[in-house]
Amino acid sequence: MINLVTRERWNARQHKGQVALKSNPRGVKFHYVGGRVDPAIVADHSQCIALMKSIQRDHMDRRLWADIGYTACTCPHREVFIGRGPGVLPAANGEGLNAGDYALMAMVGDSGLVVPPDGMLHGLLDARAWLMGLPERDRPCGGEVRGHRDGFDTSCPGDWLYGWVRRGHPRPGGEGGVRPEPPAWPGRVLEYPPVMAGDDVRTWQRQMKRRGWRIDVDGRFGPQSRQVALAFQREKGLRVTGKVGRDDWREAWLAPIT
Image (cartoon, rainbow, N blue to C red):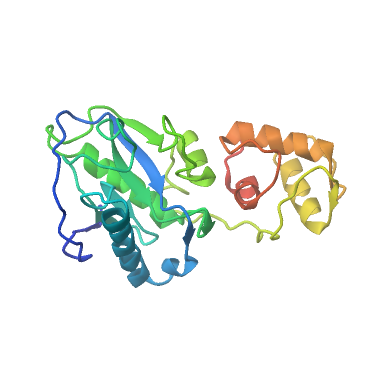
């Protein structure tokens, strides 16, 4: 069952006006906060509420929108915060695109908290199911699930979340399942040229070999490792750079083997 947080519960400001949707949206687009999200929100739910208020202030006071731009937002604790709500035109999808989809935001960024915890992924899917179960006048008329960057020039919703969308947005580990944690990211991007060497390279190569890729486990990130990284990124819908950054490192352990 969805755990909805009403606007009253998160103490939202009064909107400056609303525009009702003239026709049903096709589906939903997933977004992220962008910038840095403090990982402390995973352990402190009060910071999720503070983040909602901060986003609303930014949208209303800096962007001069009538309200927070998202239909709803989800946090690491599987709670779904109502933003503009259903039946109302969102503002986050981009000019000319807002009528096409509801906008659902996950509280992750491009630094700090980058990979959404399981509760956040469940929350996104709970929010979509909630919208699909609305009365006919408000519910999406199709089942489309896309990322913000689909049709709009943006990095949103981030490489990890967009890769999950491209994989079919599965429930993590089954309903209520626990996702195993990969080794800690070594803190540097693995890339070529020049050849980079180290135990972190060896650890990544060993994992890619376990996944079935033809790669030498020699601790040296050279042309062969770069080609494997490129092929893996294409397969998993990640940003194709040939470099192994934080998201690529985690996906080497978390992405399904296909």
